[in-house]
Length: 393
Ligand SMILES: Cc1ncc(COP(=O)(O)O)c(C=O)c1O
Image (cartoon, rainbow, N blue to C red; front, side):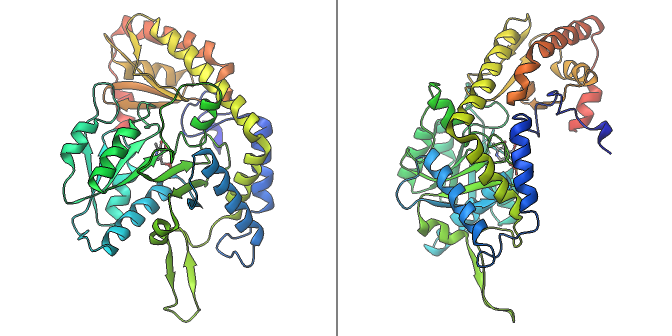
């Protein structure tokens, strides 16, 4: 069935899949299989899953400078983590007497669409503010967009389109001044940036070390390299998290309490996350992060050296984008696709998007060689990018 799927095992896919190597994938798979039938909905039946979730959350909070009293849960992915943050924020605001019927979530334009989805589900409005010239959140413009309707402001660490970390400290100051909930979306960076920092990469403060950061989303199934279906949502305090939890006895089958949107929660995803975190440990993650950041630097350097191509901004983690001055980069993408390279695209400005895995270290030279050829072909034919665009229409 998979014969026409993207070739991620051959490291030719730079989106959707995070390939840390065979050994880690085996641990993730074995742990998943051991718990594939168990259900995280029932902590009394499966105290081992409760313990694993608590330990995973503890590890995440340790990495993200969670203060005394900080807490969190595992969810099925970044979108659910974000949904939980927005719900908790909305319900806390409502409980404090605010009218949330026209409530707004204020986002840099580069924030993930999961916020629009969450706002839509929750009867709120997502309001996007153009990014600054450096492609990071424009804090002054966001400050101007704050109104009595604003409930939450958001910064990303990093944002998906460009791989850049927003100025979280400045956003936190804005949040503190205006009494707003600041959510940091570290879905991509949460299990990457702390290790990059340990490796000596100079990163701005973006986590709970910044006063004013209320909640953080961090995905395990991305750079945590665990099986799909695993993310974490963290809150600065239990008081905040209380607004995330659903509880009721209003039916004939007794009391039910669920911390997240899910009812049944796949034990496999929890066990896999616990197992991979322990298997890799700090040293293992630092090694994987080093492979990714080295490969990103190598690729960016090679791309910037190619006449007419340029990378965007100063990304420091595992994700970057690059565009072209004189030709349509989407046409180049189409040529790369024909050679089996599958990655994302950015539309503003038009760019090829690369989310790297450790496995890409092996193929970086091949990619650059194919990129140079693809570029030469596009320059000689002057072809249009319509087929590629069709995919994104
Ligand atoms: C920055 C960011 N936030 C949120 C998400 C949503 O995560 P998921 O696809 O796990 O729901 C993504 C996914 O790529 C992301 O890059």
